[in-house]
Image 1 (cartoon, rainbow, N blue to C red):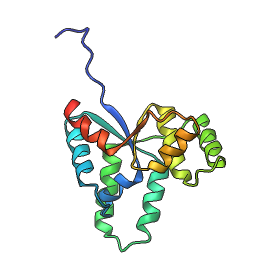
Image 2: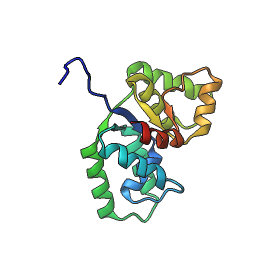
Image 3: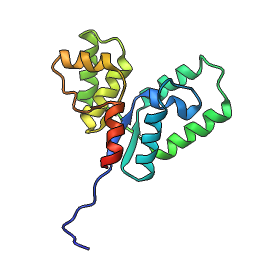
Image 4: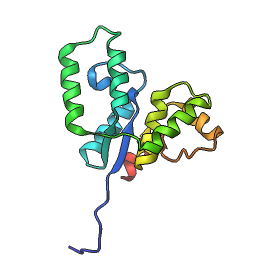
Length: 158
């Protein structure tokens, strides 16, 4: 084997809470194709999955308002513990999230997820167009944001 050929590094992908909900048994509309794409990429070792404590907190808060299946939640959370890397923003990322919140974006969890992706060089899979539009309007870098359509296209290229 040629030692100068580097193995391809998996795509480091931070998932928005939307994509974690099905793991614990919460149905999300129109997500089946995206979950299939994630599953294919994960099993081919083309992606490395990330989450944050903030998305886990949001996930649990949403679950607390539903008639959840405790066994499904236990299995889902254990699967996430096993297959996901937990990440946080840097200190500058926390400050950036505070600044962006002050500039008018209401969903602080989404801002923390965005700044985690930006400061940790992750791609952030989200369907939140409001977040993307807000960030663009503020001149923020949105290259880390990945749409479902872009992810599905990656299945064929990675």
